[in-house]
Amino acid sequence: MGSERERRRVAVLREYHLLDTPPSAELEAVVRVAATVAGVPAATLNLLDDVKQYQLTTVGVAGRQCARDDSMCAVRLDRGVFVHVPDAREEPDYRDNPWVTGELGRIVFYASAPLISPGGHVLGTLCVFDDRPRRLTREQIGRLRDLAGIVVAFFERRRLARLSAGLEETIRAREQWTRTVLDSIDEAVIAVDPSGGVILINRAAHALHPDAGLTAGPDGAAARYRLYEPDGRTPVPDDQVPLVVAMRDGVPVTGRELMIQAPGRSPRSMLANAAPLRTADGTVHGAVVALHDVTAEHARQRLLQEAHERLAAANTELRRSNTDLANFAGAVSHDLVAPLAAVGGYLELLGDPDEVPEQPRVAEWVAAAARAVARMRDLIDALLDHARAGRAPVRALAVPLGDLIGEVLHDLDPEITAAGARVSVPGPLPEVTGDPVLIRQLMRELIGNAVRYRHPDRPAHAEITADGPAVRIADNGTGIPAERREEVFGMFARVDGQTARRHGIGLSSCLRIVERHGGTITIGDTPGGGVTVTVTLPGKWSVRR
Image (cartoon, rainbow, N blue to C red):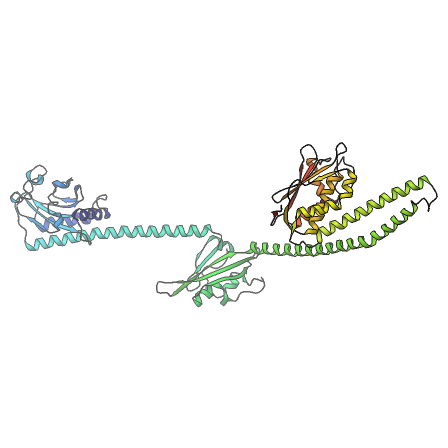
């Protein structure tokens, strides 16, 4: 416990910063008075830390430091009492001290008054001594104690002055730091005193109001700062200025939008948040406002609104266009198919030898016209399929793909047989979720392509397999160059070098069907030649065995 108290005593001594500052004239005067009061030729002001004794100022002797163990003042320092030794040579505690024996000095008479801090810690002593025996009176002892108190009061005054200077420096540093922070943000910040005079304005706020009177009161503030309602035309009433409201009502103002129209500057839309400033007892003593510039945000909102309006107009036009396409598909089915059927019928009559005299050229022309009508009918059917693939509602039903492909192969059997082709399904196919009509249209087109675009040098063969939700139709036909595989999904697209057997709409319809189901369709190579089309339809699926 004693060692802890000693550590604290030394720490308090160092807080006074007495050992690193020269003595003042006031301290020297006190020491001279102490020598006079005691009637001795010498006096010192001694400070002791845990290692040494320091003679801060002396009278009648040359000042010198010594080890704490050699100090006469250290002998009874921890008691904190006045020490009076008429003849140190006769005192057991002092007679062997080097200041008594002649090693450091020849002190005979010795007296010291402790220097006790307000916290009760002994910092050192006010010491008087002589080289011959003496005895102090009660009055002399009292005066020396008074002088020791004056020394401590001087120490305390210097400590408080230093702390005050440090506090002022800290306050100045914090003010500078606050100013730097406020000037570094883009929010405009203004604070006013109770009279409405500006006491703080940061860089962003000054940029908004470079010419505004900073000492003027609240009267006319709206006009002075060019404050308008969000419409930019209606002036803000003086009693509705956010700073005025916060200071008058003593409540925060949040989200108050207004417009500032400073001369020579573009109007700025601002969002104001104001709050009252209060003293320690809660009295309103001013107000502060932060202004957030929302001009750019409003501009973005206007652009988004315009974009939404344009998008809505485009959607309306797209719906109208889709309606027109649907109507076109109906017109094609009714207004073109029927005349083509009539033309085909008449061509059949012209090709009847009993109806037309034998004319070789006429028969040739009739056959050519019949083929053109057939191609026209195929094109119309493809267009109708494409239209249905894009506008028909997609139902989410369980579709057993194996059964569906069996039906497709039955429908395509005449074409497959005529081509001498072979279509195989070596394993089970999954049950997928989708629209049965559209998926059937998709599979019919893909299997039909595998038969139509066969290679002239080998029998046509197509194989249908499944790997999880991915269904593959692999053929050994003419193939599609890698750089053209994206292009073939466009309307009327054909691959260079292939015989134009079809109209180029089928794969475009397949893409529409797959995308409407949220799936994918890709084209790759088949080992040995040909293409492999892979279709993946998301959703629930399972393998039926």
